[in-house]
Length: 257
Image (cartoon, rainbow, N blue to C red; front, top):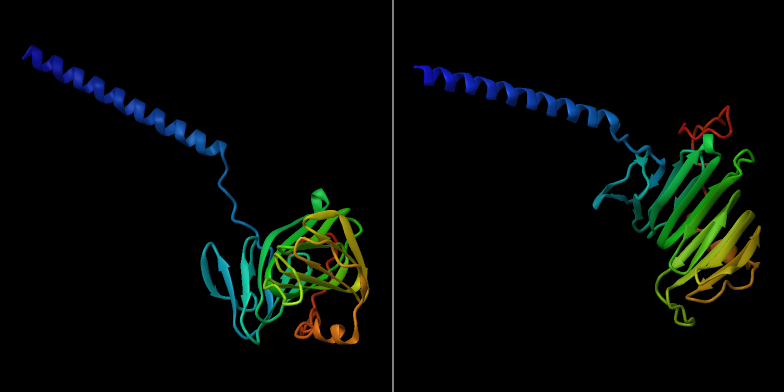
């Protein structure tokens, strides 16, 4: 009988010790979780505007149909089909419009008025897109870039079109395809990925091309045929909204209207 009482008492002591250990472990886990705030959901980089035809969006290896008003995020890939187009309105009201048969990724987009930063990077896999970028003088660190396999177009406040043909033209030796940039307003800078130190500066109605590993072609004014052919399908951007967005009270605000 005495041995039974001893065993029972020992069992109770061990049970209390185990309970205390579990409570201590739970408290430690709670403190650890409190030290690391929950991950915030990513903020949209913008939203889809006017959509025509068949347009898809690929996110985290999942593809679905893109509809007007849908949010778009960094690393989203947007693909337009034949006779289709898509306009994207970024959080700061910068816009881009994809022509038919275009594949483009929103690689990066930062708009942080508190740090006076506004930067965007899109990667054009193939096709054609137009970009309307409005600069804000209060944000000194602002750059909008369009990258292809052969070159890079940089803008701060401009309206321009970038085309990229990943297939080598018959009359060109373009190892990684042919990129062309047409400036419609103000100026843009065109660079070859292999000759970043030798850029070409384009002003209104000027064009330059980057073929494979070569330096940008010398800037020249677009011919009437080029001025008509390159913007085809992209001539209406930022003016197709029935109710244009009102300008924000704070010009450095990055909220979506």
